[in-house]
Amino acid sequence: MKQETKLVTAEELKEQRFFIQKVRAVTHVYDHIPLAHVHSYGCQQNVSDGEKIKGMLAEMGYGFTDDAENADLVLFNTCAVRENAEDRVFGNIGALKHYKKRRPDMIIAVCGCMVQQEHIAQRMKKTFPFVDIIFGTHVLHKFPEILYSVLSTEKRVVEIPDSAGVIAEGLPVRRDSKFKASVPIMYGCNNFCTYCIVPYVRGRERSRSAEEVISEVKGLIEQGYKDILLLGQNVNSYGKGTDVDFAELLRRLDCFEGEYKISFMTSHPKDCTHELIDTIADSKHISWHLHLPVQSGSDRILKLMNRCYNREKYLELVNYAKARIPDLMLTTDIIVGFPGETYEDFCDTLSLMKEVGYDSAYTFIYSRREGTKAAEMEDPVSDEEKGKWFRELLEVQGECGENAYKKYVGRKMRILCEGRGRSRDGYYTGKSRQNIIVDFNGTEDMIGKFVDVEITEALNWALIGKLI
Ligand code: SF4
Image (cartoon, rainbow, N blue to C red; front, side):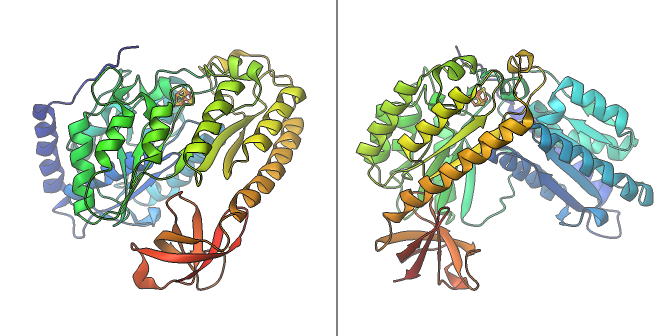
C-alpha cells in the first residue's frame, strides 16, 4: 500500500506561532505564571506527543505541575488500546468536575486516540460539559490556535477531523529526560490487525523523511542524549518504496561519534527481515533488543487476527536473530482469550513461549474495541476462564525470564544509569545494551552516564550487579 504523507506547511506552522504569541499575551496579565498539568496515557508514541504538547505550552508561557487541582490547565492525552485504560480516563475526567466548580477559569482539555473514536467523542461531549477542549490526533499541531480560541471566547472547542493524518516537523518539544529521548520516525498503521484500533485513530502509515530523523538524532546526541528510542507502530515499514528503508536508516544512525544507544519499537514479524537483524548484529550502537510481538502461538488465531505470518515463519525469524545476536533480548506481546480462542489454541501459545524463552513478555487479556473486526466475532469463553489462562501464561513467562537472565551472572555489562532502583534500598538502576534492567550500587552522579557493572544475581525481571 502506498504511503500517504501530508506535511504541515511552513505557513501553517507560522500561523500557530502567531497563536502562541496570542496565548502569551492573554496569560501575561495573570498574577502568576500559568501552570499546566499534562498527563499522557498509554504507549511511548503518546508520551512523545505529550512532550510536544508540553513544548508548545512552554512556548506559550506555561510552567508545569504534578498537582492537577492547582493547575490553570489540565490536559489528558488519552489512549484507546484497552478498555480499562479508557475507563480510567473517564474516571479521572469526572474527578476534575469539582476543581472546575471551585475554579471556573481552569481549562480542561482531552486529546489523543480515545477521542478520535466517534462514539467516545460523543459520550465525552455529553457526559462532561465542563471539558473545554476536545481534539483529535490529527490536529496536535493546532493546539495553540485551539487554546487561544477557548481563552478568548470562553466557548468550548471540539476538533476531531477524520483525516488520513499529517506530519508536522519543527514543533517544539519539552523532553522529560536529559539523556533519554524518543524520536517518532513514522505514524499510523496499514495493517488492520482485527483486534486493534490504531489504524482507525492514528490514520495510515506515513514516514518522516530520513533527513529529518537523522538530523534530529544527530542533534540529540550532540546535546548529550545517550539513549534514543525510535518510535512507530510498525517501524519495519519505515520508508517503504524509498531509498532509505528501516535497516538503512539504522545504519545511518549508527555512525555518529560518542557513546550512545539506539533502540526501536515496534517491529511487526511479517516485515522484520534478516537484513534488519544483520544490521543490528553488525552495529556499534543499535540495541541488542528485538521486541517482536507474536500475539498468539496458534496459526488459526494468527489468521483470525490478520497477522500475516504463521508460527513457523515467526520461529524461523527468532532462531535467525538468536544465532546472529547471541546476547539478544527478545520480548513480545501476547493476547490471551482472543474471540474464538480455545484452550488448545492457548496451549500453542504456551508451547511457543517455552520454545522461544522470551526474556520478558507484555501479556494482556483480549480487550474488545468497538469498530474493529474482532469486536464482531463470537467470544464464548468466560472472563474467569481467560483469567485462568492468563495466570498460567504469567507463570511460564516468569520461569522463562529467570532462565534467560541467568546466563549473565558473572559477566561484565555496560549500563546506562537512569536513576534510583527498586530492587534494593540505596541501589541505582540502569539498562544494558539489550535494554535489560540492571540494579547496582551506584551513586547519584552516575545518572545519565555509562558505567561498568559485574552481574551478581538474576531475578526474573532484572539483573543485580556491583560496580567495577
Ligand atoms: S501492526 Fe496491528 S497491532 Fe500494531 S498498530 Fe498496526 S494494526 Fe495495531
